[in-house]
Image 1 (cartoon, rainbow, N blue to C red):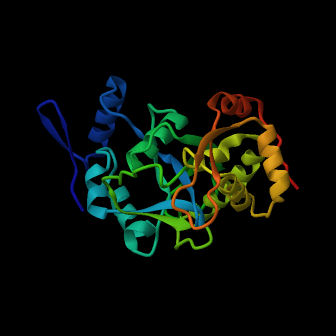
Image 2: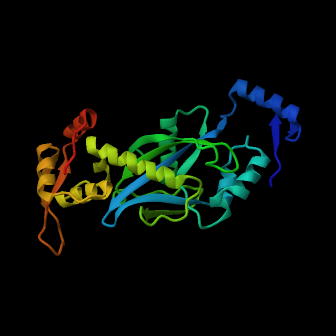
Image 3: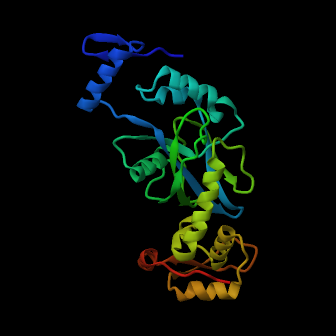
Length: 284
């Protein structure tokens, strides 16, 4: 485990000297020379994607050496030791995790969630919404951490994901075939799905999962997958048409074995209006 020293002016202060370190910490805090990391508050992001195989979630595994180089200087040797000895993702190749991190004191939650999403995947200007707070006492066995969950919606075929510098693996998983997850990340995904199911009934958020041009069948398939229920095709198409949300592109599918279907796109003005005002998408 690496040993720590802090430089202040011309003096070198051994990190074992508690009083000196405490004094230096207060001086630095007052002078705003570094940003504190709130070790007990974190953000975790669930990234949903949709394709022909259904609804999927993006997970990652951490590169141990890259992580060590990126850790903030104010974290102690004991904290690092505990992290590497007890964090599931760092102790076994079996475990995967959501995209998360501890919140810096100079960032608000939404801002940090967006920056975290960008750092982890290279994605920006994507749909992102808070789920809720997860604060079970033993959710992280070796320390006390309260996390704020977020979920994001993207179309996997529409984005070129940029793998984080500290991630050794980045992979999409079907929601019904998830690998072992660390901490309570399975619970966070479950709550994110519940939140998504509620949202798609009253706001057109599910459309973020579709490509720029799509068929009516693809929209129906998306809603059936999210809501986990079959819908009457005639009623669905009548409902979606009455919203005046779709624009007929005048194009049809290419290179398909079946009869080519019409392709549609979203009317962004109507979309923004429905997003603000809400909609009733209860199709029985």
